[in-house]
Image (cartoon, rainbow, N blue to C red; front, side, top):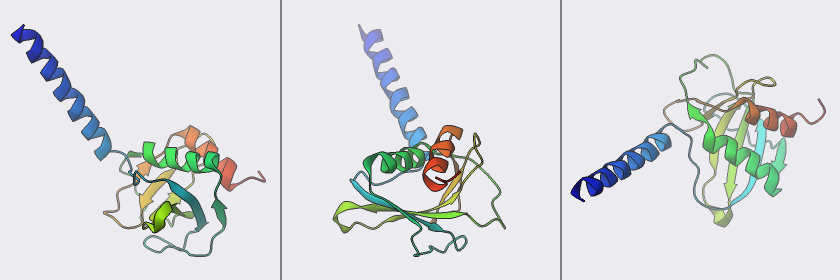
Length: 142
């Protein structure tokens, strides 16, 4: 019986360690309802353009951005000297501070790159599926 409990405890510890490791390697947002997602053309790294190009209020559009951000995985990518295409502002209900994120939108079926405006400069990559869905929202005429 002691062996069973020891194995169960060991399994739980591995599960907890795995979950914590995953959180360190993905982007995070507040666990609060998102009111809207605002997108503008980027003015460069470290600068948030306040001239809104798109404002998404629909739940489905918000979910595309939210899932794309939360599932983006930390990857070293050299974006020095390349300005982001878009600035994404995640606005929360209740007047909470917004998350400001830079977006380098990938080509169709390629990954996109995300980076917190304020932070250490780590970059995160989305899946190609997320890129395709973001392209549908940001480039509707194509």
